[in-house]
Amino acid sequence: MEKNIAVLIIILYSSLAVGQDNSYSVDALVDPKTRDKTIKVGGPGADIEGFNNNSIQYAINFLGKDGGTIILSPGEYEIIAPVRLKSNTILIGSGKETILKKAQGVQTEYIEDADYGELKLAVKNPDGFIPGMKIQVTDDNNSSCWNVSTAYITEVVENVIYIDDYLIRDYRSDKGGKISNASSVIDVIEAENVVVKNLLVDGNKEENFKMDGCNGSGIYIFKSKKVTVDNVIVKDFNGEGISWQITENVTVKNSEISGSGNIGLHPGTGSPLSRIENNDVHDNAVDGLFICWRVHHSKVIGNRFYKNGRFGICTGHKDSDVLFENNHVFENGSDGINLRGERALNAPHRNTFQNNIIENNGKINGGYGMSFNSPAEDVKVIGNTIRDTGSGTQKAGLYFYQNALPVTVEDNEMSGHTLGDVVYKKDSDR
Image (tube, rainbow, N blue to C red):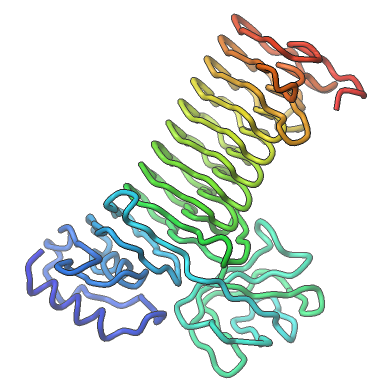
């Protein structure tokens, strides 16, 4: 990067306050042919100095639609608003010494109803909310999935917070209505050809409010294609570690996801061609991997799912034609692998479980190596080791509920289960 370009970027950076709108144009400053260069962000000598989300975002915006590579130097970056990656962008850290840490959470009640289509909220206490911050709006009846509103703050005037996007529901102030700065650390929204690599995402769970996983996570990917997360640590996010919704060709590999307040990995809402490979996913509050709706023609290979609060792996609604191979699934709270209850047409058909080790699950309330809860067709369980080595918590190797169809079971080694290796439902089993 030429020095005069770097100086221009630094001038732009220093002239804008933290939290202000990041959407400015630098197209007039430099020949477009040079915008694919590498930009370094962080400490002294970087093209853009500063350890916060604004420094990173300025680099992303500078690269523009043609994209390029952003290299983050070692250090701790304060994340007040999500770093939003654009198409054709590569974000590379310097390993676990590059830490993107979520700033302290703030939350307040709104004092009048927040209605569908509104662009403002009258709140009890606006302290801590600033322009540029991303927020989450909920009430007791609209607190999850696609009932949650998210937006960026554009202005705060006395006790009124103005936002950049319309509220999508009617939210009641007398029904637990709240606004918080619960949001992702990194967002990839409506983009393609994006890589996030070699860094640590610290969700700072103890100082933040819970984020809904369909709308944000440590790393959140939405309506995007050809996105790779490689050699990334995501820890202690108060919500989900990595969530990708309405996507194609998302790969998460060589990464560690732990300490999430909900799920570790959550592909869903139609995310075919997902590839989940060689990850450590552990100590998350609910599932290690929750494959939600319509995650088909995908691969889950060579991962370790362990010590999660409920299932190691959970799959269900139209999650068909998925290969689960060479995974180690152990010491989860309930079942190692759970095929959820679905109606026949929506069941997870044609999934193959091959050469996995599934052992000692059910650590919290007891469970099974694998449980089959829906009439899924052409499911294969081949060449796996499924065992309880003395804990007594994984009570059956393969457990079939009454509506489950037979599966192909070949060449598996199963042992140590108190109810038996292959068991069909009895009311007294759990």
